[in-house]
Image 1 (cartoon, rainbow, N blue to C red):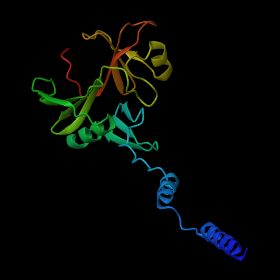
Image 2: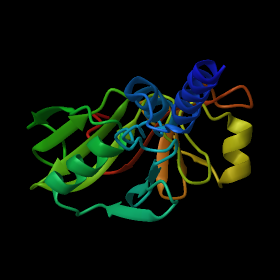
Image 3: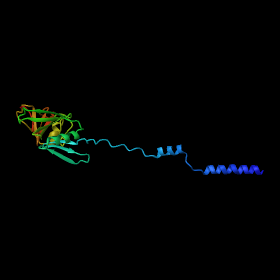
Image 4: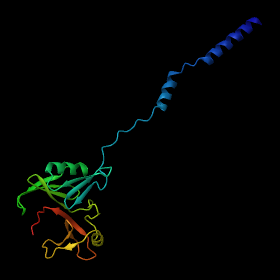
Length: 199
């Protein structure tokens, strides 16, 4: 009986020692660490200009950052500054640039963006803009496609008599053209500052 008792005691002691051994299994530790590790935080994407981040206005342009702070780009601002700012605000696509030596005001440089915005420069200074596609608007919501009713509600509109270019109007310090003169009309294009219209 004594050898059996000793054997039983020995086996019990081995079992107790094994139960008390808390050395972690390396594979289990690695699996637990993988599960507990926080998911990697994605790097923020390049900032995207908020909708309405660029506004047209009678004195030039206005850029709004994501927090809503405004930065004016008035006529007279250096050409390189305006092109860099507008290019960033419109998604980073560089404009198509050209020169027209036959404008009535003299040689004029143009920077045309894919969204229908065309900037005009003279002597490397921002001098005017022309817009012919929907998207950009003034801060009070006037843009290409604005109905005549909405235009009248936002601004005082004066038609330009005897314009040779179409149904031309002025609305404060912004000019433009309508698709029709009456209530069925809508804004076809807008401009401010220097133009290169051949009347």
